[in-house]
Length: 367
Image 1: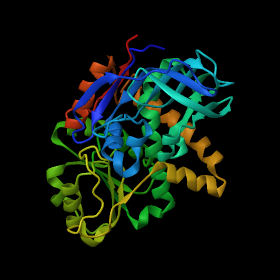
Image 2 (image 1 turned 90 degrees about the horizontal axis):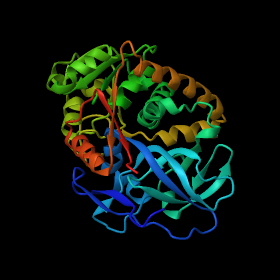
Image 3 (image 1 turned 180 degrees about the vertical axis):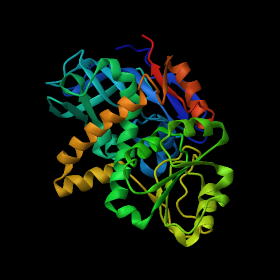
């Protein structure tokens, strides 16, 4: 531990603006407290979504800053236990979980088991338990040190892809025979497309001109169209809108064009918006419904099917990982960046929508 720890904070009113500031570090640990030293984490449009919905859903509350203007944008990654007064959590242990962009994180360990532990800090109650659980890598049979970068990138995203498809499939796709996917170049979007490959439903991708060649190269969608082509898409087919963009203007155009053919609007992400716009009096057709992965998991828990769901999920996730990093035709190029200064630049590009869809950004903390 050090009194020179740092953290990268995000200006809530402008997600591209960040500030590197001191990170308060404890000098003495209380019983049950653990210090986690962050080593590597991913940065994707998913993190921009966390920030965009920070006030509406509670993500800004997870890692309080003491400054109302700035928040800690949550990330997924790997850390090592730097200090511990929690029995069962040993110094040097490797963990995977939810972190702020900071050198260290102090947690109050509870529900300690062979597989991991949870942070019982009161502010963590703002989000479901899945975000507060830390996996001990030594006990994870699916963990591979060589695949840490891929896992940091896709593990938090693919669970959203997978649970979204599980939810829609369980609902019979609300009667739709076609799914129109916005921000089709996003990792969550093409993860969902991968999961839907065997379903009897047409997949139509919407993407910007800059990412069109990338989306077409994936081969994951039945058709790929630019955002300027929405009004030229054929109608007369029951349609579901899977919205990863979160763009209010695009949503209005999709709703107006498909009219009564639009059966459901599933809002999953916000890659192109930093606002939470659900109520729109100008919107034609069904009101957007925000999808939350934890809700799907809770439903399986209530049904007693959670164990079977995870068995399927882990097998399908492994297959997806194999596909995206297939040496013969990889879907993504993983690039490591070093330090919080580099993280700030990646955040800016993601917020500005100019990041390379074919690149997966991993941040390594310099020590």
